[in-house]
Length: 397
Image (tube, rainbow, N blue to C red; front, side, top):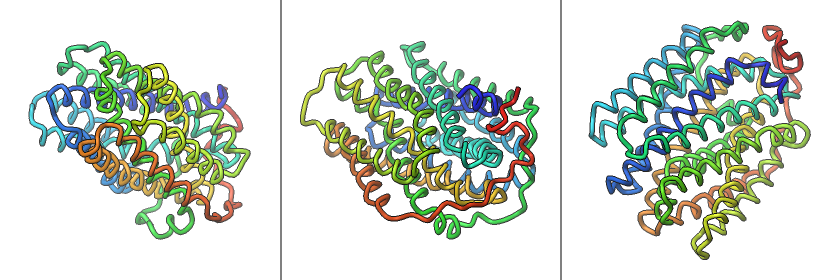
């Protein structure tokens, strides 16, 4: 793991800081709006606006990277995100906050495309699971740190928004100062949805359902915990436990995915997730320590779906299509993540907070059925690593 971490240090550090900002904001907004007696539906809509921005941003990012390159595109997106977050401290209007959150989603999507396409282009198939696992570890660490940082602001004033903006600004530094060679220039080409859905349908369906599950958790787990009567500190620990468990599982799950069939691994994980989620339907009033165990189990599964699916999809494309695939993957995830919190929020308003896990278990069961189909063989064409002298097989000294 250390050698893989040393292969892309600037990209991993930027990811850590970016996700710290997102983790803090999502927890902050859920708690603040709940304290203001805003319904779970509107809280879910706020989170969905961010993920809808990911969908639009995927197309923007694809074109921007082709036009100005990876680093300039990332810098422009970070500036837009910082300005949008700071603008939220100037307004006390839910519609304006939703609109600004949409803009942040667009900007973050561009940054995700830059990092993920960069990682995949300069990684061999035999190392792809481990490289993406470290990427997801950094994502999980950043999210957990951001969620735990809410305990520094018990009054839920506007200071957390300043913290979010600072993390976004700092994420620029490792990107603009990196000494690693840039990815190969991308030729102008449209985002070819039919092509990618044809060669990697299972991977993209997994990404879609993972978006539903993860976004619902990020946006509404705090609302679920409030409904269970937990304190702010307990809520922070509950959500962070799930994220920390997920990041601890990334490396072993990535290592395993490089040695077994990725599609079968996704299917088996979905079966386990469905079984755990059934226990949270509200049939039993679980003690807090048991809820933490279940939260850890959810994290191990739900936060590894994306990396496994991304690796499965990238196993099947040539290097010149990496940016296009990254855009399609993010758009697919964004669509799922846009739908998930709104549907889960509506179900929670109608049937109680336990409906969050009813919704998640239905998504996981759907994934089990989809992954039972046979999948296309992995392409034997190796990715182009001629521009990556420090690839994971040859760690940077």
